[in-house]
Image (tube, rainbow, N blue to C red; front, side):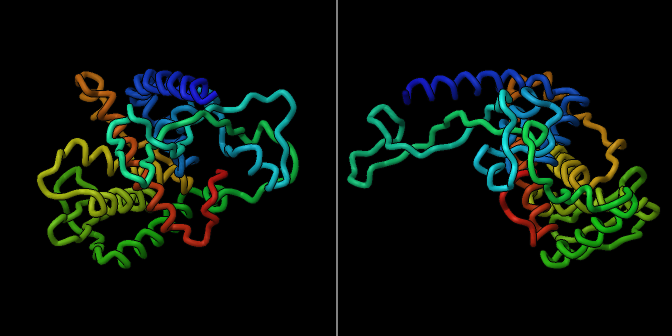
Length: 281
């Protein structure tokens, strides 16, 4: 039985590796980031699994969670297969297995199934945060104010209305740990830019790969802005072309995507400290 479970997990993982190729375009990457905004606690590969199997999903959970929320999965609905980590006793064949008495463990994966809210029926659920923010301009104003609080708490002075180089909307000084924002930005654009620069200060050091750093900061800002209900039409993903032609392009996508997921989830959690940590949205 364990072997069958591992085979299912391996097959799903192979499908997801192929699915990585599908998001190495501007349209595919934007669709992935928009989905990640709805499922911020899900890993990159599990978010990709949701896109591949049910691209219209908005809120997913397992049967037990839906039951606790007063809803039931409709008869005949097919679950969305995702990967769940499990800790098992290491065998002699596992790399790093020891002969010590502490029973060394390794992490493996098994396939579990979740269902979208449209596959369920029952009690209505509270609105998601993005639905509570109202119009885009209101959302931008609220998001910017909340991000200012985070910057202040983390010791990142924000200097608005600073003349920057042409075409530059914001700058994060990795040495002084300050953020400068250009004048004349709309409220939505100002909020997205501040999220971008906070991500830089959280993640990056001088001398790192500039292309990957920009991709991580821009992706984080896109996810956070999408979660908040802001319009993200002005984003460009020029770095995708280099990934698509790189020998290790798929590995870059996985690495950057994993960083974006963790950073966006951290930022959204800071924006909504009162929320229940259980992911059903």
